[in-house]
Image (tube, rainbow, N blue to C red; front, side):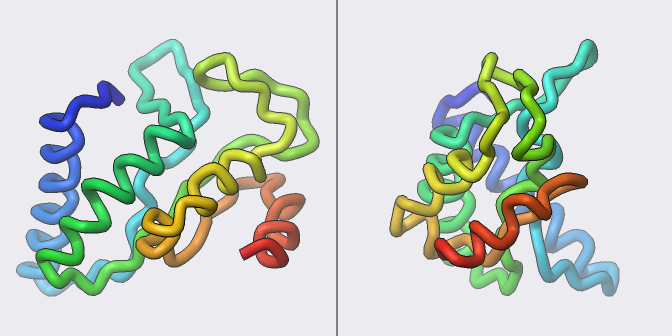
Length: 136
């Protein structure tokens, strides 16, 4: 993601329009996972998010926009990919041996946490679920 105010505003606007378009066709969206596989750096175009960038997007753009629009849609982190116990280097060269740190970086921000209803983990994420539950 290119982190400019214009891009982040446009992306938040996109989600609002997306949710409304489905609602207008009789489909109610109740949850939004901002990005699937935030660490997946592919050979094809990917959308990588550092925890700092995702925190800014949710805290300063998406959450406030949903509030202004009075959208009853829960914002979730994730889905977060890559098991906690697998030594793997993902996007941004980040070593993903403990992606609890990724979640903590976002949730330690009170304002960002106030907009987040839950966290979606993939495959080996069960290693993180209990720890996240205990912490938050």
